[in-house]
Image (tube, rainbow, N blue to C red; front, side, top):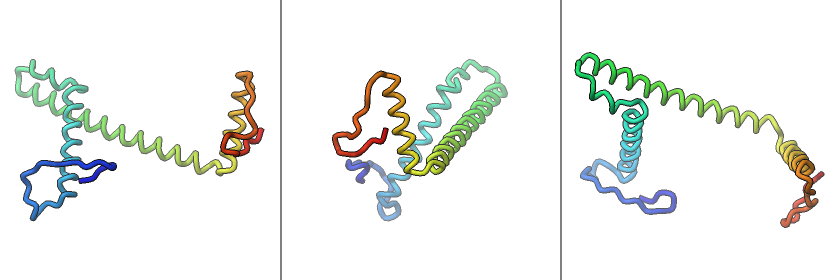
Length: 131
């Protein structure tokens, strides 16, 4: 299957009559997400240290609490990332394109003045930079 300009090969025992190559890729992607989740769960949440627990109820409580914490951490990460993307999009939409260029130009001029350098009025491509 081509992916990002490269061919990728998947070895599977799934029957071609039921699963398309795209199905196999999607199953592999989901499986990889599960692997990453469990790797993070085991390492970051110290699940690898529950071997010391002798009591079955203590072990069950530790595993359940760890799984709930991992699910909560994942959900919070998704929410925070979504909010950050929404805020960035709102900020981009709040400043019209012409104004964005003026703000960037003003920022460049300010940085140049503080550093003691001057900016050329034109770049090598011929674009004009207003001062």
